[in-house]
Image 1 (cartoon, one colour):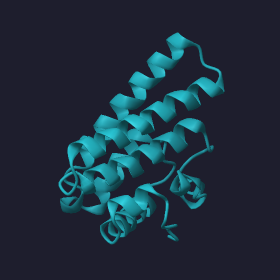
Image 2 (spheres, one colour; image 1 turned 135 degrees about the vertical axis):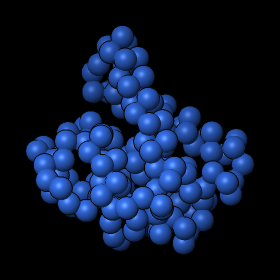
Image 3 (tube, helix red, strand yellow; image 1 turned 180 degrees about the vertical axis):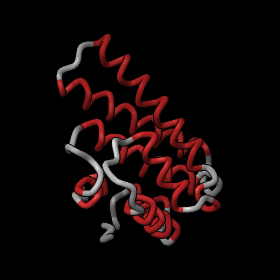
Amino acid sequence: MYLTRNKKLYNNFTSQDTFSDRLIIFLFHFAFFLNLFKSEYNKKSLQDVFDFIFKQLELSIREIGYGDASINKKMKTYVNSFYKILNKIESWESLETSSQNDIFKDFLDIKNDNSILPEYFNTYRNFLKKNTFNSLLKGVIKPKF
């Protein structure tokens, strides 16, 4: 969550800073996290993290004030979006910057064509590679990028 509060991520591409935009950015962070650690850690640990994240997401949507029917619809939309993101970033390293940027355009209303998000998420991936799964989960490390 700490990383989704980075104002630089929103200033250059969105017309407004909304819950949905922040959530999509969070889902990208989470997708890169799972993608990078999926081969190094057991599936149960990753599934526990996934379950916790989406349970917290559901609670956040409830706090906003949506009804039960709306919450189910929103959760289905967000889970489907997350799986689409996971699928699209599977070959991230082999994609050119323009193709990486196109992935973000599929999920966010980007005002102009730039490489801010691909650069940011490449830096984020390198950050993930340099740190351990447990240290990232416990919030021991505060990124500064």
